[in-house]
Every structure is written in C-alpha cells, then in structure tokens.
Image (tube, rainbow, N blue to C red; front, side, top):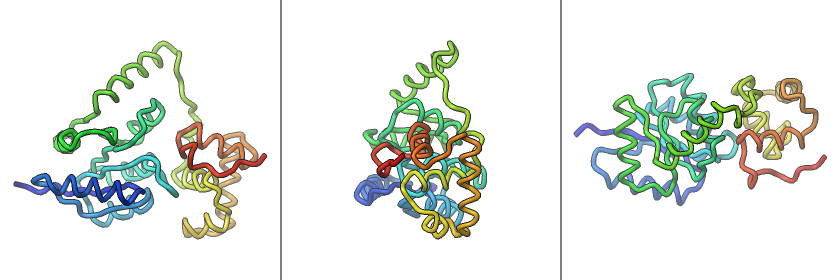
Length: 226
C-alpha cells in the first residue's frame, strides 16, 4: 500500500497529538510534520512536501485561512483540508476561496477524515454534510442578494493580512518586525497601506475589522482601546 504523507497544523498540542495518533493507527498514513501556527505550516509544507495538510483555522501569528492561500500560490500540488471547530459561512467561504479542497469539523469521525484524505487525493473535494448544507444555504442567500461579504479582504496582500492579524492580536511594531523578519519601517508602511485600503484609521478599527473578516477569533483579540 502506498503511504500518504500528511502535515498537521494545529496550535493546541493535545489536539494535534490526538489527531496524529488517530491517523497513525490507520493503514497507509504517515504524519511527517506538525505545525503550531500557520507560518510554521507553510514553511514545513515547503520543506517536507506532504501530500495533504490538515489545517486548523484559528492559529496565532498566521491563521489557517491565510496559510492556505499562501500554500495554494506556492505549492498548488499540496491538498489542504480544513479541520476546524468553526462552521460559520464566513470561514467556509473563505477557506474555499483561498484554496482548501476539503472542510471538516473537529468532531468528525476518524472514518470521515480518512475518507476526506482519500477523496482529495483523487482530485475531488470533500465537505462534511453539515458544511455542505451551510454552503447550499449560503449560496442560495448570496444568489438572492441577501448575504454578501466585504470585498476589502480580497484587496489585501498576504503580507498585509499577516500584519493585520498581528496588529489585531496586540503585537507592537517591533514584535511584528521580529516575527516577520522585516524592518519596523516596513511594518509601518504595511500598517499605513492597510488603513488606506480599508479606510480605517486606528488600531481598534483594524482589530474589529479582523474579527468581522475572520482573520482572528473574537476570543483571541486583545483589549481594544479607542
């Protein structure tokens, strides 16, 4: 039997180890790497070249949605399956838009996860039944004009999205510069560009926008000061 190589991206160590143990009990699967955030997931995917990445959404520094977008651009041959606690229309829609070929909820059975992996490797997409139902509902509402999402996020570059998440998580410019290996001056330029593109002119506004757009979870935000 040919071995399927998998990378896990999940910020909670206990959850990540549990998923790994679950997969390695199944024949034909090999977990070749673990990432605790989106930035590490992208770096390890480029280095290790797994066939499949199981990607959480809510991760610090770089979330799974943006990590998926970066992987689609640089490593289109790698299949990304979202494995998340979130079934919101916003997250599902953005995951698909950013290149995910599967979306499962964390309460999914091991059989479903295995089925999803096999399915995407055959060049098809796989979504759990509850996700399919939400997609159908969302597409019907969008077709009727009742449900639309902001188009601002599409105009942001990957680096701007990274800076936005770090700003919303409460990081100062120096910390952002260190995390992204860029200068403080470059961080300031990205912040200025963000504010101009989004027509938002303070950190509190950027944080609220990041929450509304699913860049960070509401629970992960720092205290917002006007």
